[in-house]
Length: 131
Image 1 (cartoon, one colour):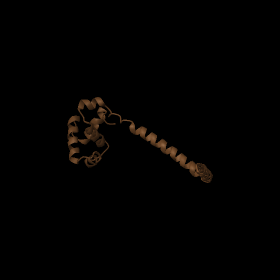
Image 2 (cartoon, rainbow, N blue to C red; image 1 turned 135 degrees about the horizontal axis):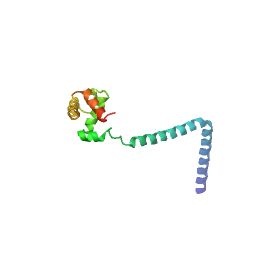
Image 3 (tube, rainbow, N blue to C red; image 1 turned 120 degrees about the vertical axis):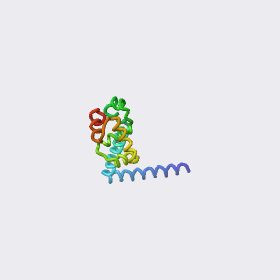
Image 4 (cartoon, helix red, strand yellow; image 1 turned 45 degrees about the vertical axis):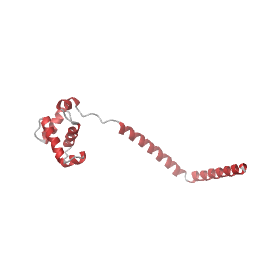
């Protein structure tokens, strides 16, 4: 009984091998394409995860940031301000209300000694806080 089972199993393996050989020969281009695509997928994932793991560099001038007592959120607001974003856009990006953005801007103006958005941006550039 065991002998017949082994013979049938061997026959099934031989049929599967023959089918694979036929498929590999008739679809060689497709098989190569799938292998190359899998290689590039793995390479892209590996590179993407390597880039994503790197921490963001600190803002331009950590000494000026520390001396002014700027919070990380105020730095974000200043960078978005320098990018030309309106209060509503800054609020949307940061996930806060426009009134919160106005509060951050008021504190930024006080800390930077600025009286307007343009002056705050200029002072940020002058101190090397924003690029």
